[in-house]
Every structure is written in structure tokens, then in C-alpha cells.
Image (cartoon, rainbow, N blue to C red; front, side, top):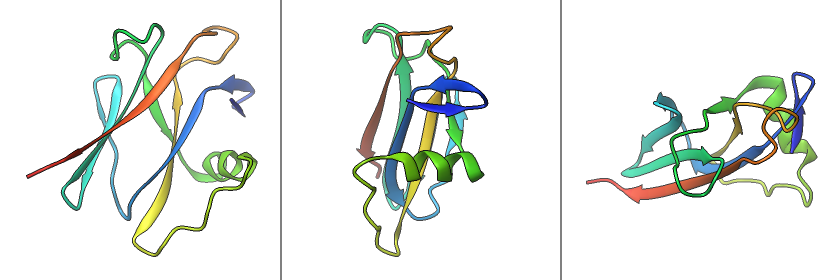
Length: 107
């Protein structure tokens, strides 16, 4: 949980291949890079994974989230980078969110 825009939000930080460009796919975020597809999605109930909107956290907000993670995130090799995501509403409005990453090989 991290404070973003004055609200405590569920965040999730992942390592991906460098220059993986995430795009909205319904309520999810998806990127494909180097024959790997990354899908970040969220739910309120661990059953239906298309009910909670996931957005990518960028810029200074992403830097602050990553800096607050303890233990510290490791330094990545030059072909990798960090991406941070959050669920749609903060914990006051939506106290039960779950977020996950699916990774699949693409042909």
C-alpha cells in the first residue's frame, strides 16, 4: 500500500524486459516484449479478474513507490526495467483488492 494522490492504494511493482510498453486491455494492463506477454490484473474476490481497473504508475509517483519498498528493489541488468501498477480506488473506498501478474510466452 502506498499513498498516491492523497489516497492509500494497492500497488504492485514488477521487472520486465526493457521498453515493454503497457497498454490498457479492458480493466487490465498488457505488454509484449521479446516473446513474453505480461498481463497485470486485479480483483475484489480472487474469482473474477476483470472487475478492478489497473493503471500504470509513472513518473515521480512510481519513483516514490519503488523507493519505499523494503527491502530495497535490486538493481536490474541493462535489458530490464521496473514497472509499477495500482488498483483503481484507494483503501477507504475499496478495502479489498488483489492484484496479480500473468507471464506467458508468445510465438
